[in-house]
Picture 1 (cartoon, one colour):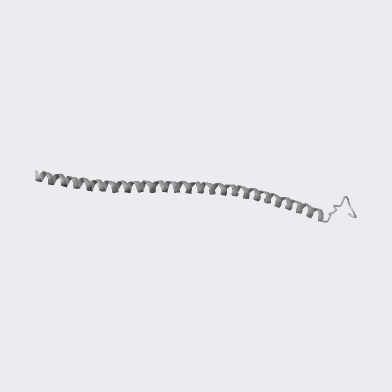
Picture 2: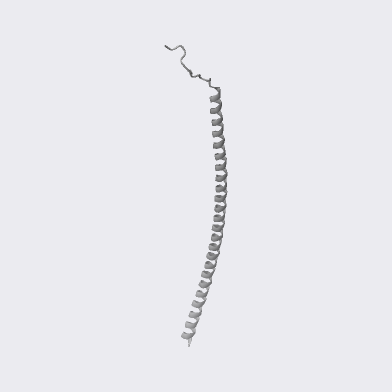
Length: 103
């Protein structure tokens, strides 16, 4: 009987140790789950921020393209206008209409 009691006490002590270890492992698992949840939330926020920045950059690029196209058009208009003014400013060269003193 005494050896049986000793064996039961030993098993109970082992059971208590296992229960303590199980609680510690459950706590670790719970913390890891919480950390994973936090990391996923941070990833979601980072992704949302990057998407927002991408949209802002795309909008800015589109706006700059429009500005650039407008400026190119304006430069072309000014070049055309300048070319017309230069043509008007050139002296008119007269082309002889007939023989003038030719032999």
